[in-house]
Amino acid sequence: MLFLAFITLLAGFSFPLLFYFQRLGPLDFWWLMAGQLLFFFALVLLLDPQERFVIKHNILVKPIQNTSIGLFSAILLYGIFYSGWKFVLKIWPQSTYYINNVYSLKESASSWRLAFFLGLIIGPGEEILWRWFFQRRWAEILGRKKGFLFTSFFYSLVHLTTGNPFLVFAALVCGLFWGWLFFQYRSLLLNIVSHSLWDVAIFVFWPIL
Image 1 (tube, rainbow, N blue to C red):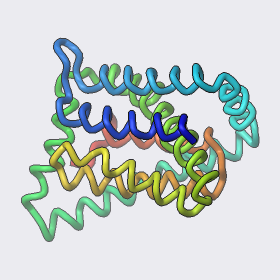
Image 2: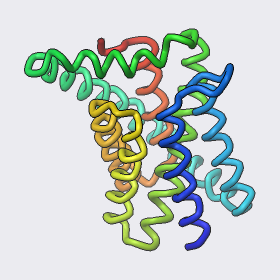
Image 3: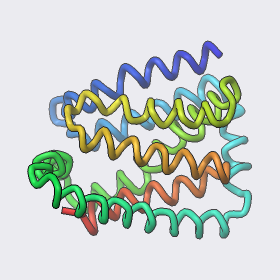
């Protein structure tokens, strides 16, 4: 319990700082985000060495099925965001400011560096931290439904320091979507495929704006 509380508080402190400052000297947002997730992953493995064996075992369960569902879910989530954005744009044209603010984070990064970070570090890292570690561990204490809801809302709240209501709401939608997938299938591989493919699609290859 103390270990979980410590990691939760650390994430609740460090991620809002990252989203607020977004740059540290020569390091842009993507370097910092990747480094932060790698730090949390290393910390979890250091404090709980058995975790890597549990992760390996989980990933090897029904890999073809879970990869396929992850691919389909990424397409579905992209469709939800694309349709939702077109609807919001019609009723609130000024919302382009907020989506432009999100995509402005891309300006300092090449498409290939962005795809590498999102697909191989940030997408997998967020699922390992938020769904595999936080949701799974809090579910053991609060129960599966409460653990799922707590983690989903916590995932959204750490984005508040961006000052961007569109991004906070998008994080809530994503948190609930990926949280439900993990709640339903309990597959880290499925969530990693879904998150990584969606990230690369919406930020690199097919931006919704």
